[in-house]
Figure 1: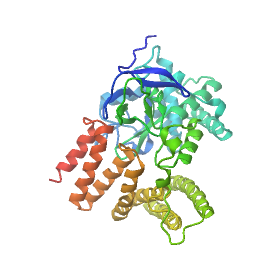
Figure 2: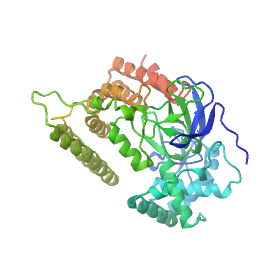
Figure 3: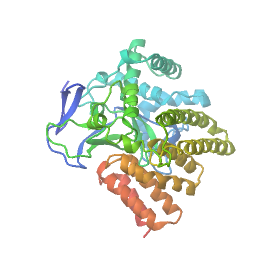
Figure 4: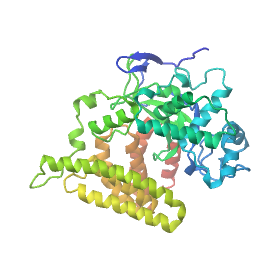
Length: 447
């Protein structure tokens, strides 16, 4: 089995981290280090009809599958290209109807199993790392994660037994652990969720909270671009997590999802933590125990909101009146938490920003454009301070604000925000990405 390799990149043993990637030549900011097609991927259910199931192209007038009427394609070629994967679901969706409900992880894993049944050689997605070599961290899974794995295995058998020959139970346990630890979320230019995928060579990169590369998506390909200058011998490092939060929160997330603690410069110096945890200027400063209590409340309310949002999403199918009611309750939850946190935390505090971002999302869903704009304006400056220079989170916020401004006939403010989004996106996505072209067309229409 021949290994092709990637020009300018090599696999190596990273001290203290295990496997990793390092550069063998210079890369400057914005350079493409490599691209990796998805080994397996799945479009999220909520984007059906808006994106092609096969190539993830976003456009109107897609053609639906004649049998299940749920999968949509650009043309006959895309439909034929996707059939080897779509056939796993097509008949089942017809048979189960509204009861067809495997999770995205189950759907993705089914496709990996189907693909592995037909392969005899490594794929173009596995130039440096095979799917079977992905880390599973089975021994480090807690009881909750083990139970989730078993639930996924049962769902796989339930929904796919007529179209798949399954490996044994132990092999499935390993595979689900690998997918959970190494799966990627494909997102659009506003960081909306489009689907899930496995990119083996991209998964080989180790984490840093001071990353020198960023991963973006062009259709079903992952692209890795430099966001810092990289010299030969430098390890290629990406971020596995949202970098908004302070050191303790970031490492808790890394330990929970990836089973390690980061020791990068940002984590050892905690240089940004003070700004991220800024307190409101008060004539009578809060006592340390009051700050600790508010921090505990903030972390709890974030988790409570996540659960509430998940429960409300289940009810969204009940009709417009129920959607408005659910969103109203979520928005009230955001506003009440912001009032409480704001008694101690500054508006630039990351916990305040988190709830503002959630409130903005609810306002967008409710088509409350002024409300969304108000929250976005409060978020953008501290985002630019807390995140790295080339951050998709900052770019997407400028993009959302720009489009809101234009929709509210604030033309000059809209164009200014879109230009700031482009400065970041041209580095992260590359100047030839179709997102860049789409935004420039939006701007041209305003002239």
